[in-house]
Image (cartoon, rainbow, N blue to C red; front, side):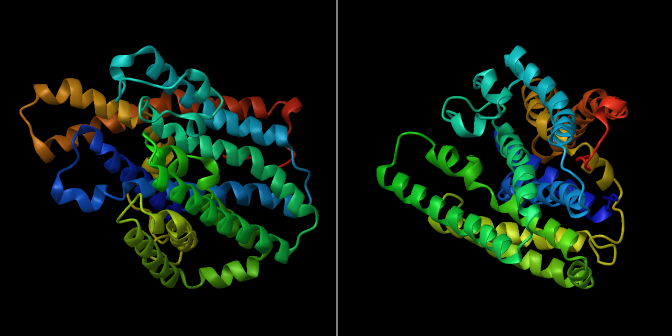
Length: 371
């Protein structure tokens, strides 16, 4: 897919929003900025919708053209995209405990097997816990190609709609049941994080909404064009729907938010992605300076920002004659520098090596891979 400035803008907003949320680790930005940091966790849900849309589009385009799906090629490309920067970050967390934002970390194999989000003891081991979202995405990468290939063998609109409805309604029922069970028992552990917020089966809404967009784009291009003809209306509707969801999430751990808030929020973000993928609307018409660069390094920023934040808070901030909000340009500069270093020294060379290896005859692509 051609790089679109609107999607870069959404990705850059998502990563900045997530990093603002994680400032709670250093005392926050202060009450005047609570409106910005309070809902910053939702940036991850923007990433989920974008992943579902982009990965879904790339896989489905090949299937729609009748090309055979090469699982080897798909997993090869995703591994080179994800593992180098992730592996280096994990090695730093394991080898240098003083750099961690929290003292304790789960066993290395939970990260290596991408089961952290299913097995974490969040009350004891919070360091690098934001890797939970990578686990969700990895599980998506494992299952979605197989499901897409199965659906593509006998395309059926009713069957696809039924599957989507099953996933959404099943998620609502599952989160509701788990919430009511734990609320009644009140187990002595952070059950909201461990049982509802982190597990993959609880967080499928964003990825699903992105895949729905991809299906419409690939299999119903006429309808896609009609929808994109009104990008500003879509953006307004997306903001309204996301705003409604965030009203539900005023009590982030409450029943209403976790029963129906996730699909509503994801649907709102999906409308924003749909609007941003058009070059005719306000979101996609112009390239905001710096947004493309932030989007390009967003993965490395996500992996490393807590390490950088903790380093500034522990060693640099006490030595500076600055306090409060005046310190945050320092935090931003160090976070960007560390994230950029990880991107340019590890992530980008890994992608270049992947592409060089991929040009060998033995690794000829038979289906479009994910960038």
